[in-house]
Amino acid sequence: MDKLAALRAFVQAADTRSFVEAGRQLGLSASAIGKAIARLEESLGLRLFHRNTRSMALTEEGAAYLDRCRDILINLDEAEAGLRASGTNPSGILRVSLPIVGMLLMPAISSFMTAYPEIRLDIDFTDRLVDVIEEGFDVVIRTGDGGDSRLMSRRTGSFRHHIVASPAYLAQRGTPVVPQDLMEHACLHHRYPSTGKFERWPIETDGIAIDLALPVRASASTIEPLIEMAEGGFGIASLPDFAVARSVRAGSLAIILAQHVAVRGVFKALWPSSRHVAPKVRVFVDHMAANLFG
Image (cartoon, rainbow, N blue to C red; front, side, top):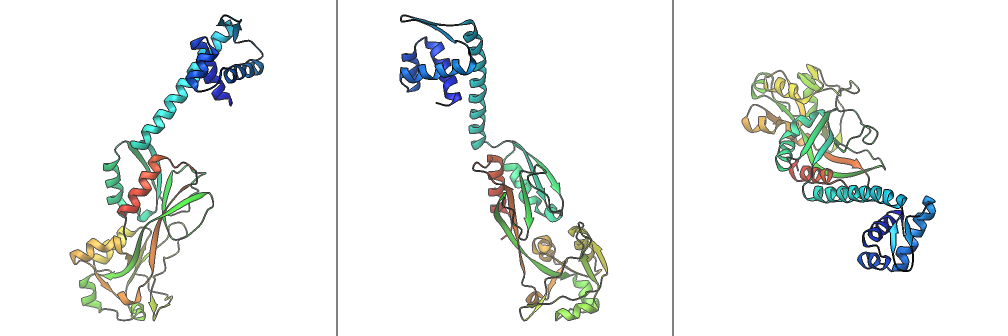
């Protein structure tokens, strides 16, 4: 019998003043209750009960120990009840790391907040490779691959890039027909804030990726300014489909060179590996998998 079970046996015996009755209520034999209390007394170096053939009573030390044991067991029971309740009604602070482009994931985040009002989100927007465990994040959303044996992962959505420009720009400068035509156009680039490097445009010819040193009209470390510049007719941009979907539907941006862009990207949720996933993490990952793209 472990220490916690021994504490329960002691409290039950103290309440009933009987090893037999304590054993009956706990589903144990009177002998098991007696042995558990004897081990407690041995480890403490003091007697908990005065016992004879007709009666038993707590010693002064036993009475003081009983109060402490009750507090321990009450706190444990309350903690377990709280966790069980959180399984059906997740709550608490959820620390989430999203990529900078995560601002465009806000519809899914907003619907999560509506569905789980008792979960308080603490969101960090960054493109750097965070250490999920060392930095205390509950879950992160990232694109691409990358493994860490300490983490669990789940695919939550997919996307592809579109090369886009405004109809006004294309009317003025012409529409590129093959990737090499981009060399004669104003190109708007996404720059990784962590490295300062430009994101490569995922263009290909006959299924073979090509890497062109495209002209630079402007660059930005976030997606939103590039959308604004492309809509304003300042150049051509390569942007995720979910970022430009509204603009394409509205007609303020047009997709070009679609047959030369075949790369799909993947969103993944990553969280610390554990046998028991916190309910707030579980419902967040489930929600994002159901509400992100693709």
